[in-house]
Image 1 (cartoon, rainbow, N blue to C red):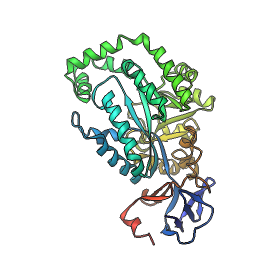
Image 2: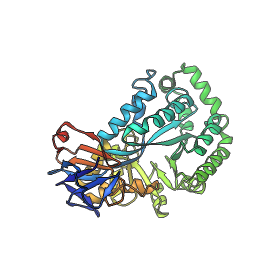
Image 3: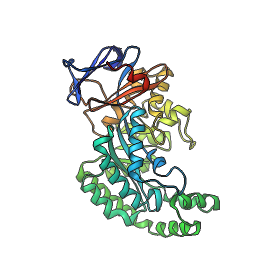
Image 4: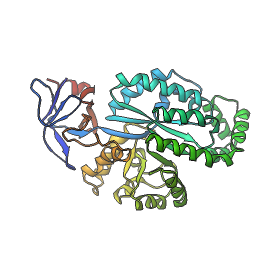
Length: 379
């Protein structure tokens, strides 16, 4: 079906202005197509669909409570609906592949990949896999290398949470928390963590193999939670050109000095700071040290964060929206989305600016989600 989104304030060339958007054949058309369905966007903003390159909120659909799991197929169906309702039209789902059993283990990895691949045709949202490979998960290395070679992975991130886990599980309460997530007895989890960590000297060679596979497959790589500029250099040497959740301002500065994308969480902006006590994302974005905001663990935060950034008075609305649309698309090499221009993919979110809430989401030129208020605007 062809569409005309008419009468809204449309974000083009970096600033909103009155203008219609025509969708035909899955893309943004240069002019309306005769007979197109009309969506009345008067009083609303017409914006590029959000591009989320790091979000793991789907884990809550898979395991809403510790030890309580649901089929990945059901979780993905619900996740796709929630993504579109948040205005996200491209989602790189952050799937952690850890040595931990349960939600982040190899069985969950396999089930999630299969569920996403089965859901794509009906999802509306463009679902992709962002593999967050835990450094010490050496037993799964060969399998993930095969998945990368088979084209099942769209982004590769280098996670290294095991040293922190080993440190924290010295406290019984922390050990019990991790064990519950993994579905294990606490003593068994502690023993497993120490057994895995004992192979630490094998990690550099494993990461080098991952990097070679990613380069061969042409997929972007991200370093995660870099603690120092020196760590950033090491991952840059592997080919990771995206710096994700830097732990200090110095790391972000080092990445931007090399014109690398720097990703932080939209919840950080919405909440006014990091829940981990790290740098606040908003002022860093205003200084150009953060170029991408991702949903992290809460999908609605992306759209809200763009409005928060604009309301602070430093960035114009176009620059604020670029943090959640054009910039993430560019960072991962998707040149066909993130902006509203003829010939680009027809990913559009129509937003009520007073409520800062999506009214309708169009994905690949088709109406993929609509609110009750939005449904009344279709004519």
